Length: 145
Length: 145
DNA sequence: AAAATAAAAGACATTCACATCTTTTATTAA
DNA sequence: TTAATAAAAGATGTGAATGTCTTTTATTTT
Image 1 (cartoon, each protein chain N blue to C red):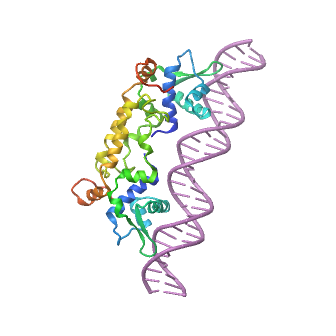
Image 2: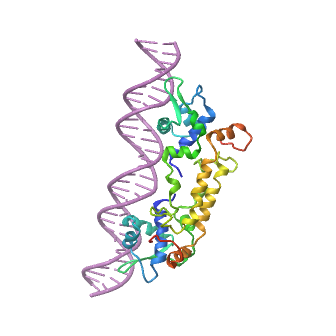
Image 3: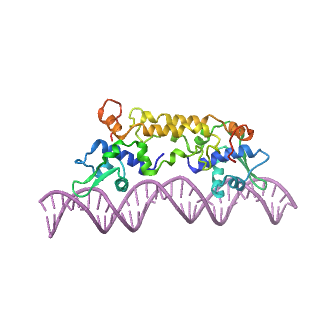
C-alpha cells in the first residue's frame, strides 16, 4: 500500500517512541538491526524524517536519533501524509484517472467504503496511544518494535 | 493498488463486454486508442489474458479479440486473482510481514475492515452486471469504456 | 499461390523505487 | 589538537514493472 520509505518511517517512529528519549538515542545501525531494515537506505529515510521534523538527530560520538515531541500527537495517517501524501485515499478502485462523482467508474459507489475505512484505521490512534499499547502489556500486541 | 497489467486487464474485459461479440471483434489498436493505453504493451497484456482464458483472439484480417462467455460471470476480484493473485487482501496495514492474529501490529484490529470492504467492493458485481449498468442508461455511469 | 492483415513471440529499452558505497561535516573525548 | 564517532550528503548500482521495436505465425482475401 505504501512505499518502503513510508513504511520504514512509520516503524521508525514507533520504535523511537518506545525506545528513546532526548538523552537516550538510537543510531542507524541499532534501528536497522532491530527492525531488519537495510542500514544504508534507512539512513536516507532518517535524513528525510529529520528534514520533515518527525525526528531529531544528533551528530558525533553518542549521537543518533530520537522522537520529536510533537510527533507523539500525530496519527499514522499524519506520518503517511508527510512522507508521501494522501493520494492513495483518492484513488479510483479501478485506477481510472478521470473517475469522479460526476463521472463514476462501474464500482464507484461500492468502493467508497475502502478509503473511508483506511482513513479511520490509520487515524484513530496517535503514536502516543500506540506507545502505551506496546509498553502497557494490557493487550496482546507482541510484535517487537 | 493494482499493477498496470491488472488495471489494463480489468478495463479491457469491461470494454470487450460492451463493444464486442464473437462476430464483431476489437483489435489491439482500437482498444488501445479508446482506452488510452500504450498499444504495444497492451498487446502483451492481451496475450496474457488469452492464455488465462479471459478473452479469445482471432488472427489474420478481420481478427481481434472478444470476451470469453465465461468471463461474464466473473467479478472484478476474480479477474484480479487471475492476473496477479489476491495477496493485496492479506497485507498488513503497516506492511509488517510477521503481522498475524497471534502477533498483531499496533493497528491490526482497526485495519481489518479495509480488506473486507475491498473484497466486497470488488466482488459484488459481475462483469455481466457492469455491462448492464453501462448499456442500460438507467444510471449515472458515464465513463466511456 | 501471393499479398495483406493482425495476433504471437522474442529481444531490447526505459524508468523508478530501492539499495549501496564513498566522502564530507559536526561533535565528542582523550 | 588529534583521533574517533556518527550523521549528512553525494554518487552510483540494481531489479522489476512498464514500455517499445522487430520478426514470426496464422488467417483471409484476391
